[in-house]
Image (cartoon, rainbow, N blue to C red):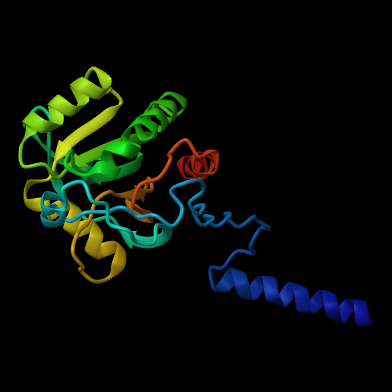
Amino acid sequence: MAALAVGLVAVALLIAQALNGAAPKAPGRAAAPLPAPPPFAGPEAGAHHAFTPEEARAAEGRLLDEAAFTHPVDVAAPDVTVTGADGKPVRLSALRGQVLFVNFWATWCPPCVQEMPSMLQLGRALAAAHPGRFKMVAVSGDDGWEAVHAYFKQAFGGAPKELLLARDEGAQAARSFYCAARGYCPDVKFPETYIVDRSGKVVAMIVGPRDWADPGFRQWLEFVIAG
């Protein structure tokens, strides 16, 4: 009798679900949460050398010391427009569907120039490994293109084809990312990098320079690209 009662209860529950338009849930597996980006490793740890444009032009080579960090973020990426190397506007939201590595830098910023070689190496490797799923964007805060093109020509023989090189008129894009990631608007300093996932969400900001050859960070980026 007990077994019959249990069976009747089960049947009743199924009928109620059917009447309410609810189907029994099949067992499934929840999506793995995105892990936090790895902290800094190596000589860059604890040394965030960043400049505002005004500080950089007055610093005469002096570097500013600040705590460097990699910080997880969970906000929608600002819908900003920058100017491409061909002079045409580039709307970053048009790149949605790819993981974006957005680096704000300038030729007058020593730590920006210091991190550029390892950053470009990382960009080439990920673009080759994940065609159409990853894009590195270097957004310059320089006043014009002359210094930017001269730097890339002298240092690398020209900008790599895998890199989307752009300029930020009036630092508007940099400020939009800076404020969105923090929730308030301090003075913008360079370098600063943001990782935007394929859905258009900022998932990490990296304050200050780093050695982008760090295998831990590449592994984390591979996880974001696969997500």
